[in-house]
Image (cartoon, rainbow, N blue to C red):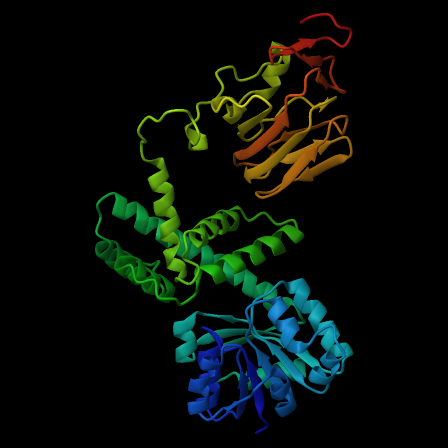
Length: 453
């Protein structure tokens, strides 16, 4: 059997390569951290001194690397060496990356005279060690079949998905389900524990019921024992959450649950848990709960939980006939809460059907909006655009008139920031309304002809 190259011996790559070696596949391996190669050496693999040596020894090279940059570096992509490495060889990408990046790499490999097969897998370290991964394959049929046979010692099942990047798109769909499921399990455990329920009891009930799975049993055991030894790391799950969210946004697909999970894994990473198992996302939930606890009175206000700031008593400062059009809108004046004088910051909530303001622009004030939750529609002079969590928008003075409207079925939460430039005016192109900022910081509303309401 010809030698097969394997580059990338991390949490997943090492057990996959070991299963191939133990099945008699002749391997040439390389890893940036050389110590990860030692078990492969003991299993009979040849340990190469460089990626170039692997490509020189093998006609098929499997890559299981951290990110796109690592792949491009190993392949010498963008240099004359790239063609020398891939020409006449089959490149097998087992990692999870942006589908568009994979499709572009496939074109580059094909142009250089090589073949490219996507082979992402579903499963974590445990299934990888047991040779029980599920593989998704995409590429030219002949290459896909050869790779399917090659990976039999590592994968209990393999599914042919069609042309690149179909396998990676399917893998992202699988990950969306996995991430949501494990995060919900962590939330269930956190809820039970905070109500005095023993996690071993919760675990027993879940294991006995119809929702039990290999994943739920494994992750619930980790939550009950606080054993976060890595199977799938927080850093890797956050990366995958972002890949799913990015691919969804590129196609105009709403995935609010993935957006919420992405935020939680980012918070867990910030807590220093990057290398812990994904079940450690419970730490972010614990941190959020701690932030909800009552706090002793302090001196001057320097920090607060935004949702603890009371909503503005006057829901709208517009004249009554216009204020009625903003029914349901809720503003928390965070800037006023801290006594800020030069600019304002509002945390604004829009229930379904509510609007942010009357369509307007400012003559002197710059405005900025950052979406925290939900999917508002931004309406401007140029048209409409659906915004998502993490999106932002900016409106310089004398720019386009604008407003937000929530046409979704769930509430929207966003931050708005604006300066308090003296002499600023609000102009309303669709309504008989004009506003001017007074010296006292309050708005004065009139008809366009200057007559008062």
